[in-house]
Amino acid sequence: MNIVLTGMMGSGKSTVGRELAGRLDFHYIDTDKMIEKQVGKSINDIFEKVGEISFRKLEKEAARCVSVLDNFIISTGGGVVKYKENLKELKENSALIYLYAPPEILYERLKKKKDRPLLKVPDPLKKLKNILKDRKSAYNKADITIDTAGKKPSAVAKEIIEKVADLREA
Image 1 (cartoon, one colour):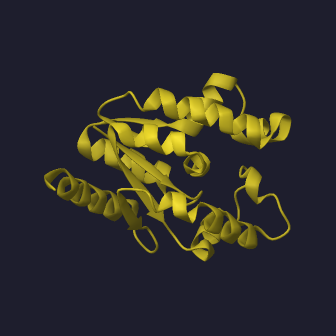
Image 2 (cartoon, rainbow, N blue to C red):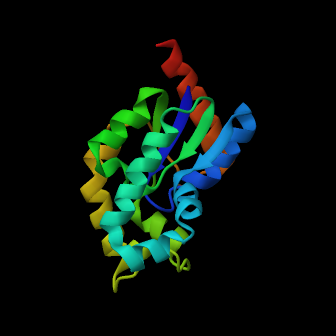
């Protein structure tokens, strides 16, 4: 069984993922890093040079590849949930965890980062709100939702471990 972390950029997927992997002695993989390694370009460069549609195809392939793993913590890109096939594959052998934070908190966490192609707009907070609104129904298909606002990654990891154990017992 795997634990797959999904949620908006800035929600803590990578940081919490590494924390979880250490606590559970699982392997860790980040699908965005996997794509960057495969293509030899940053996510930013992929968006700029070939566009979001091409990136989403790479993301779909990455979701397919990681769905067959076992004993992994998998951090996904925030948009992986946009496609039902991705959700289906990721949930096959995994507990799907949605890490939530309000757009205002996401903005505070991300405002100094220059590597977020979807936020290269005049009003990034408005963009975050629109993205969250667009993906909300997909994120809500997760097995567990964790609010990360005001929590340290260690506290989020502990909460995930407890809720996944409850999920397994149910």
